[in-house]
Image (cartoon, rainbow, N blue to C red):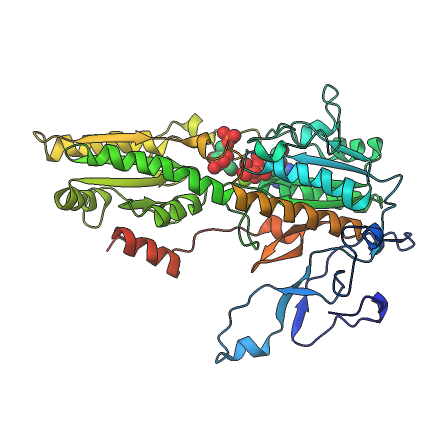
Length: 464
Ligand SMILES: Nc1ncnc2c1ncn2[C@@H]1O[C@H](COP(=O)(O)OP(=O)(O)OP(=O)(O)O)[C@@H](O)[C@H]1O
Ligand SMILES: O=P(O)(O)OC[C@H]1O[C@](O)(CO)[C@@H](O)[C@@H]1O
Ligand SMILES: [Mg+2]
């Protein structure tokens, strides 16, 4: 770590073994911006000492696991990002003119209210901002005439971390680039905090590009939110662990119902539009699950190696079975009309049919056909919104706080067009564009999926 007294220009950030991702900065297009001393310098609680401020040579490595016998591990430079945290010099006047806007878009996720609360309290207490606004109901709230921004202060948001949902409300769709950026300019916002998933981040990239094109003194930061945990690069998204914890209750109930019936099957559908992280983690932590079906691992019902054959054995062995299915799994097998094939939500995401109901009816048809005179029960549990419409647990709440503070420190330091998030346990700043493109899918070739299969003994569904 460089000494705080060292001027930033004198620091050499080029190194043959490190490839540091360049982060956009307001001075890239506004080179004469004024700087200010970070007000934390005089904050009675922090007493900044050596090592408190993060410098431009403080980095977080993208990968920390290497095989040193492989030539590529030493030959190619290691990808790195700037470490998140307070900088000594900031680029926004902490006392007067700075105005911040906070928006959340897309589906709910445990912890949304915590992030908003911590942005408000952090901006107010750490940097002295007094003009902080919540944009209502997602992107459309920037320009909708019937939804004025809500002025927020620490007193208002005091207990928000104990509540589920979002007190700012959210929505899908409504992305209109020119209207949004015009509204940001009209309201005089200089900092825009955008909380959302992959769709929101793609929108945020466009907002950042337009702000840069107009050469505006406005910082844009993305705070990744998705209960599905499908945002790439970062370790995990906030609220995911809370959702997995909530899913346990549904799996427990399915297990009890299945055990209490003759040839009982407990079927649980969990969220996961295109990734099966919730289903996978809920399966690994429950240990009552016999089969976990996810979008990344195509499954089939009939014949050798299929689901029915596996369940037949399981029922013979144990008398019951629990199946967990992610909502995006098996969609290609469910019959649908042409109109259903085209259906999209307001953001353009495909609308899925209920894989749980379909599977329940297919299971019943199979049993009636192959075992007409034997008892059989399928109990289908669909907790849907119950796993995400809850307050964040303690771990997620702490995570949300660190995310909010990282975002504030980065934007105050003049960085823009970036996302903050943990990489290998350390908070880093990642270019927004990179996060908008990266997707976190379950890798069915890695150890974790092998572990699921070893816990459940389920087939690999690779047709022979
Ligand atoms: N390619 C895109 N360009 C601009 N805006 C987009 C784009 N994709 C989505 N959006 C906007 O981003 C917002 C949220 O998108 P979406 O509904 O897909 O949720 P998300 O951010 O992916 O979150 P989640 O999937 O976790 O619910 C919507 O207002 C939508 O219009
Ligand atoms: O019904 P809504 O609010 O559109 O959200 C449902 C979707 O949102 C998510 O929770 C997050 O993308 C998905 O798991 C789910 O498909
Ligand atoms: Mg999404």
